[in-house]
Length: 82
Image (cartoon, rainbow, N blue to C red; front, top):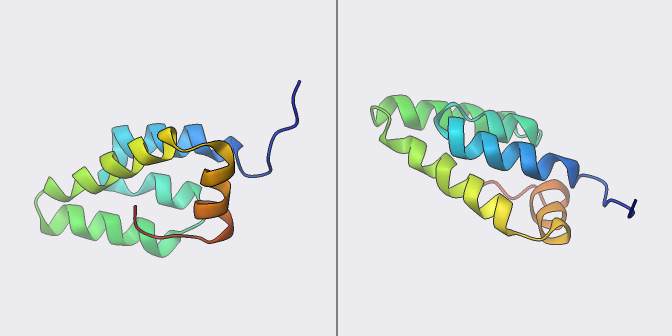
């Protein structure tokens, strides 16, 4: 089995949760960003659900990045948006 980059195991879970439950911010909680998760919930409530498109977009972005880019961007740098 090939060596896996530490943090890359969160990519698939965060991506799928972002696509399916993006409005609840669960994908951000998985990445250790509680503030981002709460913010996604607030945006979804304020926009009557239309804000959940942010989670959908983020989930797709997570899944299309390489493991190295994902870890560097969302685990190491803790990028909050897209």
